[in-house]
Image (cartoon, rainbow, N blue to C red; front, side, top):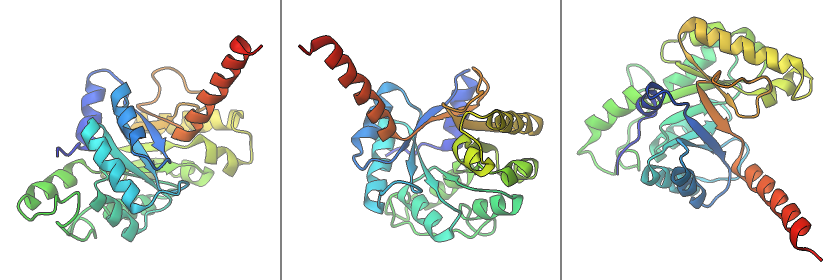
Length: 256
């Protein structure tokens, strides 16, 4: 099965003049990933921070993403080396790491994805990512070193204060500004001016460093074309929204 390199695929989409778009996935059935690919999403961001998903479900989602031709990514709550190893072995092509606040943390996260001498990742070909064979191991190492991304999430005032230093880390080419936790950390409402200002600061830093910035589609103050990559909120939030709208419409149009 073809590996879908995160760096290469995101670059290809951007070079076509399009904005890569994905969605957080927290539900257990991999059919949702099939649907994302069918309707035109570019990546599935599997959630290991707030969802109840287990390893078997993650590998099912990764296989579905590969079959659908979209990038499998994982959001991690931290840069734990053991967890990073597991998700990379499962086949994640990008690790999106929550609550990164310093360049040192960004570098430590990056090390978990690189083999020695550039990092501390352990090797094992008997995994989905290794295709259970030593035969193509050299090509896999070349692929992962070139394509696997670490994307820090900036979602605190301390993280935003240090965003320039985080972008300075060699190998950190994308950062995600998380407006939800940033608003909580700042003690303000989600739609407060401080959140819009935080987004503007993150965007300006990305431009100054020649890097790329992500955010969520509901980020307050986000203008058309500003974000280099966009991610929708959790899949089940969208199911809830759709069903709420649907039942309202049905009752309005068809009830006696």
